[in-house]
Image 1: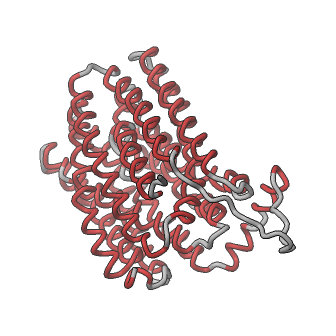
Image 2 (image 1 turned 180 degrees about the vertical axis):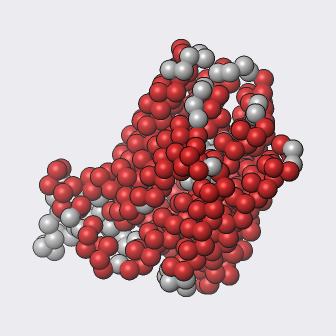
Length: 416
């Protein structure tokens, strides 16, 4: 009996969400490096690795994977490498304890984690485009996000308990170890996935695409032509790069709280829980938004929330106690879920069959802002302060309203 491929994706989404919550880029990871002796620049560097490095690496991986007729084996390879990276991170944190060498050890583990995630992500995007019909994609992306949020909520409760109950760094050792185990469980969703092999009809005169290094180079050479001819892809790249100025600055909201309130591990766990609650509450709303205006309207609302959250962070940190500050993570949760639904859905929707892996890689590599800005903003915060950096993030989001008007995802959402 063949399993509905969407079931495999939802299984993976739930358990991957548990992993994500245990290594959350906006709260858990910044708190870890800050507690270990790092500063805002260290947080920026770690964010660059977690968010930016996969995007830069995607194009190279896409050139390789686009020449492979089957993507599932490479998806499983990437996931298993991530499992090993997290297990190695847990061992390193346990071994170094409170020693400052914990920071480079975590950086090494997260680098492997990010690169292998990029490798798996290209195959993942291709498989969604192949196995999920266009008419089902709106429902699929919203349901996947809701499944993800449910997994995040469950794991956030666990993360808050562990960070509050265990002394530093024991709580983080447990989080990394559990993340490794749950990610291994997540990969089980893809073992039953049936991937059809592309066929070439005998006598059609169509030669198989080149493989190996020649195939990778040939695929990469298509990238300039795609960018030149596909104005819609160029528009999406501009929008996401401007959005990235604000999106990659969200971890600095936690860094600001650490400076203002001297956060405990339990408080960080509360931030995680509130952010996931925001994601959970926002997901059904995004479904209704997509019915009215597609992914483009979701992006507009996300941009509006980005312009709002940073001045609120400055205001609340100066006037309210830590519980009032925690409420801001309802907004960041809505931003995270909306950005994920809109960007992932748009990339799948605008990329043609047979070239989806290359589109995903090209799109990722072109998001230079996501790769570089965390490094820059971390340094700028230390030199210019939070108000200047947060103002820049808000202005970039406002500028993104201009190109997003021209983004064309078709009118499938009105009838799909």
